Image 1 (cartoon, rainbow, N blue to C red):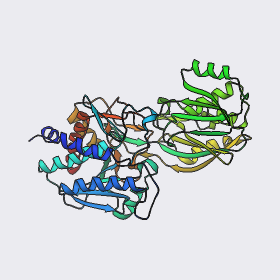
Image 2 (image 1 turned 180 degrees about the horizontal axis):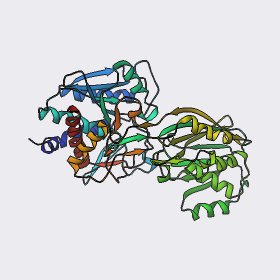
Image 3 (image 1 turned 90 degrees about the vertical axis):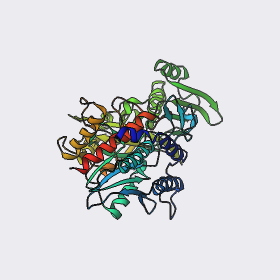
Image 4 (image 1 turned 120 degrees about the vertical axis):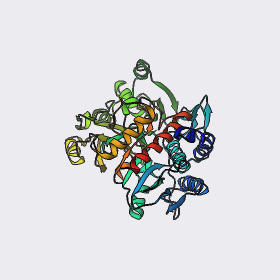
Length: 453
């Protein structure tokens, strides 16, 4: 038996398993005593563990934070670390199908999580079954670790590591092939202002997603409607302007994208505010936003623009809202792997506030970096090359943060293939069935490589 034929034999089972997991809307919910991230993430974890237990693998639920399925023997652990939680999705946000009903069209699967990261978790399940079928000698333990809070802080994996420890060799199938040897650091912040004439505002789905829709209500006759319409039309924006009892309601439709690549999206918040300013709307907060954030995604307005040989700093304004007359919004900064959070924050210190608003730093995460020549990186690279025949694409650094920052001796490896945009964190997230099977084959080869390091 060769690896490919064994893996491809599980095609129907892969589809069945992924369909069941996609059907669970595992967005973070209200924590309870036995569901630390809400009932739906817990349900997804239990569903996945039940699948693996039925297969005969050893399974453990780590206090409903995370769980794992294990095979093999030995002191060393090879970890495959995926997540079962997802970012929010609503059909009205541009989905052509129900995001929580996995839909196949001509070999392409659509649904929230088919790529990020339920599809990769199921591919990893199939890889473990194939390893057993192939009777690969197990001198180390192979553990598929599944978390439930990756999209909202990775507290799940933090708890797992406290209880179970790290791994000796590991990869998380939540990045890109042929491997991610560096991940940018992060600075999370919020901006606030009560010096505004805005009546109401709401926008965004998550801080790590480019805002796809924003609605604001302002006083009548506070801006030039013609100038605003011209500005939006000239920039090919979808929008509506209507009169309500509270004033003039303006909605801008943008394009969602992951916060690590904000330049790939269209930020509805930023375009709405720059449009209002262009249309003559006089407001301290709008001025603050346009000067400190605006349409740039490089941090220039906050004084933290920088780059190194591996990439440049990016900034995303993800969500915004208003409560008791105070506007509050999120800022997600990803900074280069050779920088540190202290320096980035110090670059911003002169630009954190003015009369229109203020920015507060709420958390920082340091970068992750492995040498491209390290045994972990080279082993995974060779596993990818042997299966795909792609010897040109090399390991990279990314702006996205993965589980690799939370557990030792681990890098992101897959699930995205080079040059593909799977619309993760966006409407119509997709992946092909053949690519999921190819992932599984690569993961089989990766485990075999790591078994021999």
